[in-house]
Amino acid sequence: MHAGRARVRGRLLREARLRRTRRGLPRRRHRAPLDGHRVRRDRRRHDMTMQSRSMEGDELRDYLDAGTGSEWGLLATLDREGYPHVVPLGYFRIGDDILLGTPDGSQKIRNAERDPRGSLTVTGSRAGGDLSGALLQGDIEVVRDPAARLELEREAHRLRGGADDDAPTEARPGAAYLRLRPKRTITWRYD
Image (cartoon, rainbow, N blue to C red; front, side, top):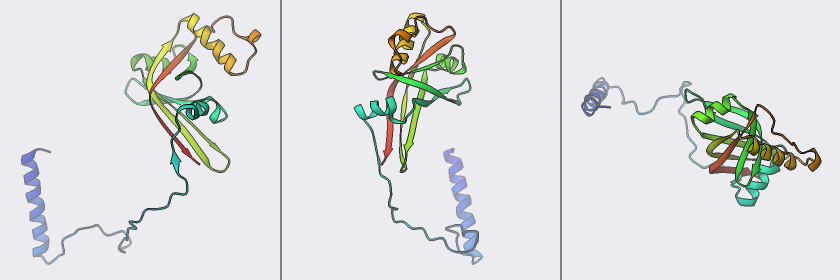
């Protein structure tokens, strides 16, 4: 707000308060609740029944590999207007990189080419109410090279427990991979 306008507004507010007190009305400090009763706020901290802790290193890698029982996550990219485009995708991990297969030319691919920023959220829960998850934020690279795609398809086949003699010999036509290189990781685990 412009400095001159703030003074005018402040002066107008002071004058309104003075008019109220001149009429014998109390100055309004708080709004009354709809039912007319005074609201009492409990300022004590509430006990948390579940305590959150973060995951790091091997625990995070194990969680991403099979911690939720399935390797699915929510990939978020930015569309042309800047809105999040969030879709569920299967993924696998090689080192610290997360790889996601998708048809070439899909909205995810177009978004990643226009703006490489993206994130993957993986969450899971177990019986007893345990809730855990990881948010990986970083840059996304589109992998279209047939030789690189074939290598990634073979690695995905191996990680799924496929036999070596069933491994793909050619890259699937019309497919591409998104490689997410995490720059920032946020994790949580409620035990």
